[in-house]
Length: 181
Image (cartoon, rainbow, N blue to C red; front, side, top):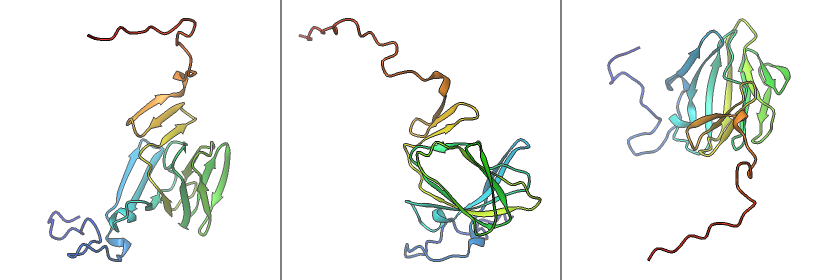
């Protein structure tokens, strides 16, 4: 990797006139993460590089024997996965499906069946992930009881749920405040 900023690829496909031009995906920087022995993936955020703000298009690579993330489902975001190379297993609820090049799956917003991708093979799997990031999304993680609230930037446990009227005094009239003078 070059340490000379003049040799690094540009942060987008935007030209000097401000127009986003077509590009070779090989110039898009990689990002990624690894967490323990279980989770790891790398990706190139094609839509951001190309100027997109409404729809996310990400080229992801899942290494052999790794899982993308915690099994989850979204209330407001929809995700689409199209397999390009290699194969993986998609967990959808309590069922598992092998996906190979040319296979596609959609995880509609609000579908209460958690999903995650697991590379069961001995070769990397490359796929296209398409979706829209929603700033108010809520994601549920049934395996751990976690709820992620994007707008709040926090996660909570579903064990802390309560009914709308729990702990609310309902058996007396409201207190009428005295107006300030």
